[in-house]
Image 1 (cartoon, rainbow, N blue to C red):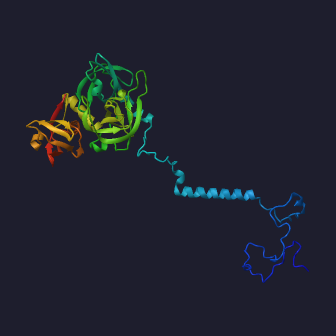
Image 2 (tube, rainbow, N blue to C red; image 1 turned 180 degrees about the vertical axis):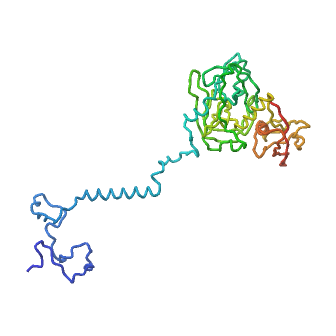
Amino acid sequence: MSDRDATGYGAASGEGDDEGTPGIPPDEDLGRPLDALPHPLDRLWMHPSEMAAVPAAQSAPSRARPMWTATLMAGAAGAILTLGVLGAVGALDRPASKTAGTIVPTSTPVATAEAVVLAVAHSVVSVSAHDGRETRRGSGVCVRKSGEILTSDRLIGKADKINVTTADGKVHAARVVGRDRTTDLVLLRLVTDTDAQAEPVSLASSASFATSTPDTGDAVWVVAAPSPGGSSPWLSNGLVASTDSMVAVANGPTTSGLLETGAASNAASSGGALVDEAGKVTGIVLAPVGGKRLTYAVPIETALAIADDLREQGYTTHGALGIDGTNTADGPMVTSMDPDGPAAAAGIRVGDIVESVDRHEVDTMSDVMALVRHDRPGESIVLGLRRGTESLTMLAQLTSLVTP
């Protein structure tokens, strides 16, 4: 009898070793002798005419599950497992990743535009100044119920007629109580219709200057008066770039310690409010400085102190060093000084080059003045000087500079 069964495959040879026959790959059919010819149907391709010779498959005791069902179930199980892993590590709670190179702000506005408007818009007023040649329009912030308005001194200029339009749409005449060109602030008071007074804003004031100043990277809003004929305040927002910025403008502000932000501003926002995320006024916006697109504001603590001085005495004071100087290739040089002033008392001489004021490097004499005038009379400053090849450090106690 042949050693092949009805299917043509040989019976198992040897002693049934499960490890396979040496020299034969384990996935080969061990039931067929090595010298036997392959079964006629044991090949990958058949001619269509041979299809009838293919034996019919025997029925299985139970129907096999279709391949696509198994695939679908495996995919679903994998998806569930993946979601579980992502949820465990918190990946589903993360925002979509930013495009490479995108700068992500350290702080974003918490308050909505509507919330900011509701918090301060009732006390941000429109200011128009007429001087016979032109009319300048800007904004102002009411700081007392008596109708006192803080705004930009450059906006008012030499105006002989000043009008203030409050949030209720009423127009009031106003007069100058006092002005401070060093910080570009002026205090106005309404003089007509005293029964309709502008409501003061909620100010970001506290006993400590530091706690009332936003940090670098904090979100702020510039809130200005509506455009003529409009009813909605002008708004823009951005991040604080510096809390100790400096400006020195001819016939304009010459001071330091200013808030600097990338929030947009324009002529109409001059004298408007810089508002923090809590809806508190944290600064009074200056008129645009030069061609810079940055926005500067006087911190509210400083602005309120100046307003108190202007209300009580009509002027305010700033620190003075008692020197004059010029700009040279080597830096700002002292050209003259008050013989009885702070500089002379500190030992400064004509010809000295000023390199720093309170560890702030200076490039021009305007920079020196901006840093000196920010301090109050009686305060001391540290000056870094160069005299010939010698570097010097001197301490000077400031006197008073009155700015009418």
